[in-house]
Length: 141
Image (cartoon, rainbow, N blue to C red; front, side, top):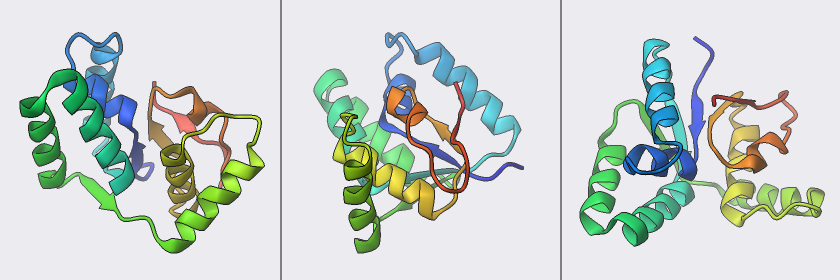
């Protein structure tokens, strides 16, 4: 096994919305990762961002189903960012000042670096830019 996979908002949304252009790719990738018995890691920030996006676009029932399913999933570890992660996120925003990373992205990158995660389930192009010290982030797309 190659370790856990960080799951980002774009992947959560693509899985939730059958009309999303990345939906089938996300479903196929999830099936592939399941065959590898990969575990997932995400942050409370990504969970909140995903819930808000699904609520806005797909409405309350879909958002509640997403939240319930993610919180109950034995395969997904939900991480509350620490004060150190928040400080590292600010440093990342400064280091990559030529990029328009969101704060959620920067916190995700801080967690990825701290937890030495090497793979991400993401459709956000910013995940191709960030390079943690543990080595390149290999995208699962």
